[in-house]
Image 1 (cartoon, rainbow, N blue to C red):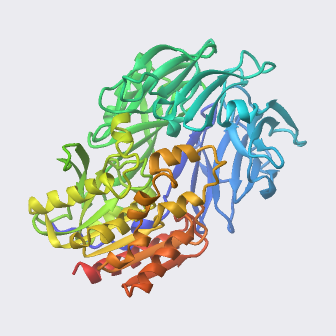
Image 2 (image 1 turned 90 degrees about the horizontal axis):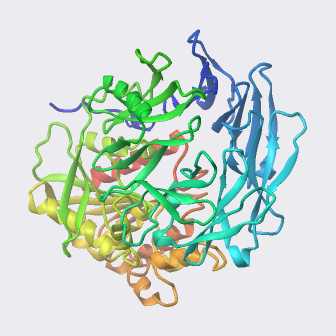
Image 3 (image 1 turned 135 degrees about the vertical axis):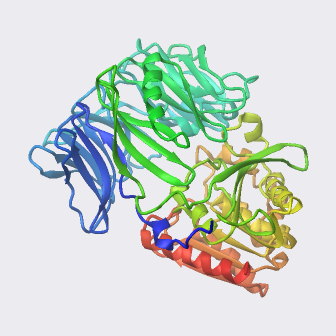
Length: 619
């Protein structure tokens, strides 16, 4: 079977439905969907099945939103936060663009029908205090409920933790290479450091939303590596008074826990999730186990996730997806214990037929130093796994990883490339997350070195197996992956026909220079990348911008002009270096886009540029 050529626009379309949520009483379902080419907020009545656009915006997209009680929806457009009264249909502004640095701490969905907690920066300072705001009142009042502790003694708070009474009684702060757990008995008391953690053994930074108090408010559930001898992150309970580990609820020897399922009604952890080759769940609660059992009615080649539930925890929003589709949303009604009802709410990409798309096949190989490396290989449909043109897709971060899923974040690029006849290699090289502390820290100070060697070794393994045509291989990536693409053609030019870099770092010295030493995360970046003073020579040796003379293959560089994560200057200096050395480079600056392209037209233009570039160099 040969897969029909699918228009690039089909891979880049905005989802037909996403960010689906339930009102607390379970009577209404909210979701985002396109309307007049803009993302708008819709509300579906569960009883009548009628859906209404409650934010008919034609100029701007609705970005994020949440329920406040059953009457109000709080949503964001550009830098403004608005409140929609569903009874009157009127929207009013809560926070203007001038308040864009305000960050939501907790929507208090389960403890208050009117209040939210937000962190507001102090004037002229790098710290924020927490305020309680009544979003249902016509008069916006801000009440300070948690002042930032002294920076000298406590560092900078980067996550506040709220107990079941809606009180801010814990926080995670960072200072140097240490993270600290701060707690206090009550809102009138001062914070104290109860646990110091080297960031390598700390509560997982990427999982801060999964910090919950126990039912008695005396303990805190966390995903953490709290014991130095324990390599992977498990679910533990820490004492809110002393910071000591009280017990471990779940620990997997091979993989970090990725997320926690939490019952706000019963105040317990119901299940945990982790990624093997696919998403896996471990049930810790019989009631939740019955919920997941009822989801077996869905096709077996799907993985399922519970995204939201009502206050009674009898109705659940479920996402079912796999490697060839971004998935479908369902409503599971478990109010009848004997008869759970599953209703399809919508297909994220109904225009895509998943059957002719290409499956992601898990692979493993040994790097040159013997380390086991995992990843995925996608083969074009209808082609034999022999001497195929190969696109090496290097993930960003690098503290990220590839997953067995349709890559909707990047516009379905894996499926797009496979549809155009290319094999795609995705590797979770050392330094990737999810495989434990040892695998993660093996990537420290190895950018352009062992991390790059893992990519090189993976490509060579496909050549040895006869899968990849050694004369038709392109390396491509975004962010850190963009750096890896540049490093590939700079330091192993014999391996690649060309490179595609989107928003990649070209010189770690200049990238670090953009971080002031006062930044609380700067020491941790230095530990991971390398101190620019101590390791200056090493960082120069792995900077593609300083070795443009070694590049012998064509390069395509694409960068959003408003990128705040990797400065446009990183691409500017790489292009200037290539041009001064007489090298072939195509440079596309994308206006009005940041680090990840948000606009559909930008995604389409990028994929078309990539398609033309690959057709030219992998023909």
